[in-house]
Image 1 (tube, rainbow, N blue to C red):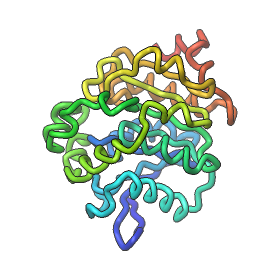
Image 2 (image 1 turned 180 degrees about the vertical axis):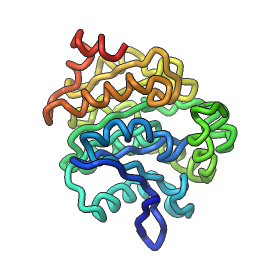
Image 3 (image 1 turned 90 degrees about the vertical axis):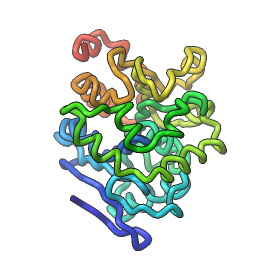
Image 4 (image 1 turned 135 degrees about the vertical axis):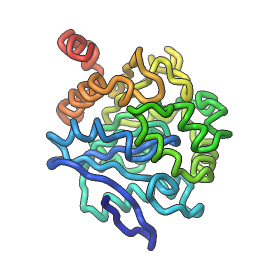
Length: 262
């Protein structure tokens, strides 16, 4: 277990590998734990970090730090504390929203960003995410099978106030226009069968800028990195291998890539 102290509070994170930094940010239902398979794959070429945000996992639980603004400051302070320059951000759900906001605020600090299960508007988030307890949400989205057991136990550590306050913060954000404002290369990934986050409609995706691309995982629910692990890791590897500044739109157009991820 790794930790640093920010504002006299513990921030828990885990790190694997060597190379350029890559940061994973978890969802409203989760912690660093479910990123393990992807961290292990990416750590062959990158130094991978997975952070527990304020109020989640083993990071300190202080409601004063639960706003989206405070979560963004956590990420910025974390990078400064560890001396990071430009990074790649991989965010899921809440982490996807934070990744986009951070990239807009600090564009020179982010080389590329992947948003997994990014809600494109508030209505895209199922009401159950707002009303369920951490245990109920973990049961709903992860289940208690052996493959997800560790992720389930970590997800239930969340403070319900952290879930609610970050969701409330979305009311002041233009989620619809958020991806369109990001100039950094951006890849959006959605699970076709995601019960928590509705797929954005085709018109919204068509209106995204040239630096962006969406890929749908047809056999996945809310956790493509767990439901289709090999495919997800292959996609992430190819995304990270793109030259800096290159649009990810070529990823799905390559027949070679299609064959590899099936």
